[in-house]
Every structure is written in C-alpha cells, then in structure tokens.
Length: 369
Ligand code: SF4
Ligand code: SF4
Image (cartoon, rainbow, N blue to C red; front, side, top):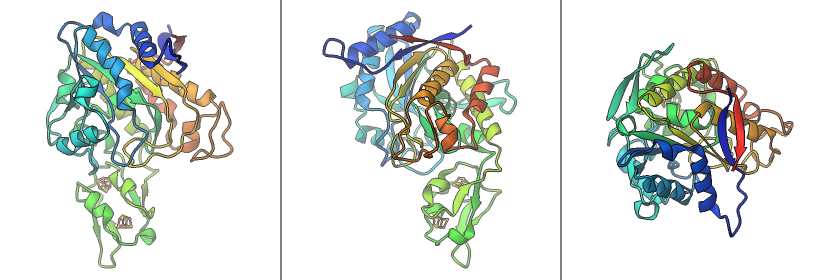
C-alpha cells in the first residue's frame, strides 16, 4: 500500500501566500488529529553551521509553530550537539548560533532548546532490535517530547550521499555518544604528501587522534579515531580524505536503526516536512553553501519518513540539472543526482534498509495541495 505524501510546489499568490499554503499542507498531513492539549512537540531542525547560508529560513517555520500552538501543543525548536568541533559542539555556542541565524523565540513563538544538554550528555537509552544497534543513545529532550516534527532541508551529504528526513532523525536526534556509535565504521585516509603541517585538523579532532610528527606532517592514531568526520572538513589541502574502504553500508544501516529508535520513543505518529529548496551538494554542517544542483521544487509532508524521502529524491532526480556548481556535466534529468555527486553512497541502500526495519514504505502517492 502506498503512503500519502502531500506536496506544495511553491506556487503562491496574494490570495494564497506562504502562510496559507503551509497551513493547507499541514492540515492535509493530519498531524493536528494526534495533538493533545499541552503536548510538548520537538521540532527538529538544523540551525546551520557558521558560514552556511543554505539552512532553512527561520520565518518558514512560523506557520508550523502557529499551527501546533493552535492545536494546544507546546512546540520547541531543537537539535543535538555535533561530534565535530564547530559552533554546534555544545549547547551554549549552538544556541547562540541559532540566535545569530535568526531563530528568535519572540519572532517564531517557540524557544530553542538543545536537546542533549550543555555538554551533550543528556541522553536516553532506547532498546532497539537492530542488526548493529541494540541500545541507541537519543538526545534526552527529543526522546521525552510527546511528538516529533522533523523539518528537513533536502540536500547532499559527504558520507551518507543524501540528507532528508531519515538522516535528520537518525543522526540528528542522536546524542554525541549516539553519533559516535553510528560513525564507528568511518575514519580518514591520510595523504601525507598533501599535508602542509598547519595543525588545523589537530585542533579540530576532539578525540585526540591526530597529531604532527617530527617532519610536521599529520599522523593518525587509528585506535583513538571515532570516525566523526570533522577532519575531512578541516583540511583545506585534501590531506585527510574519506576512507572509501570504510563500510558506508553499515554506517547507513546504523543511522536507520537510530531513526527507528527515535520513532520508538513516540506513541503518536511523527510528522516529516521536507523542504526541497536550495538542494546543494553538501550538508549544512560544512560552513559554506555551494550552488544548487536543481531548481527549488517544493515542500513535502508525510507521516512516513521513507515515503517522504523517496518522493523528495524522485522530484530532485526528475528535475532539470543546474551545472554551475558541483554536479558533473554529463548528468541528465532522470539520472540520480546524489549518486552522480557521491558514487560511494547509493541512497537506495539507506531507504531499502529503512523499509526493511518497518520505518515506512518507498511506495507513495504524491498528493498536490
Ligand atoms: S589540516 Fe591538513 S594540512 Fe593542516 S595539518 Fe591537518 S592534514 Fe595537514
Ligand atoms: S581523526 Fe577521527 S576522531 Fe579525529 S576528527 Fe578525524 S574522524 Fe574525527
């Protein structure tokens, strides 16, 4: 049986502007039928790393917050700490960055609460019957919320290939320990001759796995590496590269098992809102935003995270190609754009496995609202 995915194609007018279009989309999703008075709703979002400009605009959330509040709920905007040492590695800098990026409680009507505490240690252990994960570590305030609304920016991702609802939930709602748990199959390959000994990666590596040798070239202690991937972002000289021999399949499977664990903490259906806007090659953690690979396409809503991600991918792949950025010139409309960008991570791997775990179905019915 296909699941419903509701879709607004971004058309609007004076009579039916953004707020009204979003209200229609949210109503169609049926999320308000499950909301109880006083329900705490975690609105999971990525506030954007410093330097990134492609993250979702704060004002786009206003109709959602108003909708949830009208139904009697108490929404809060949330994310959890990252493994890498950027502005989102602990709650104080993270909340300040959210404020700097315009996520203002007074403008939006909901506070920003970093869900895993000031140092990323506020977490809930969730038992899950996965192939790799038996105990998942979920950010405490997300686990304890009555309902989850995952608001996701659809885009590429350096390791996962694609980032949508499932990644926002599986990786994004995990605590620091949970993120480490998912990344434990990954780590860098050192290309020593590219290293200029600047030391940036050494300062970035929270696990203390990187150092400089006597010749001022980078040295990796594999036993200490937790595979967070922060050093790939740090090195401007391509001396630390993704180790393509790492098991991307296992990484994606772990991420899906974490998504299942998050969903398991909720007795009510979650809502997944995918913004297929500014579809860029890299995630919002990168500290920059490259040119998009296709035009802006719309906003999708569903209570099925697999269906909403599949529908988003299909829309992106069917869309015209924009070649001014990273997209290879031989890519044609209909080709898998994310696979063209990151051949190591066929997105179908993750979606197939999510379907097997019972998170949803790849069969969907796209309903325009
Ligand atoms: S950031 Fe790159 S160039 Fe600088 S020390 Fe690390 S590996 Fe070498
Ligand atoms: S060396 Fe390992 S632990 Fe250190 S930043 Fe790189 S991936 Fe993370």
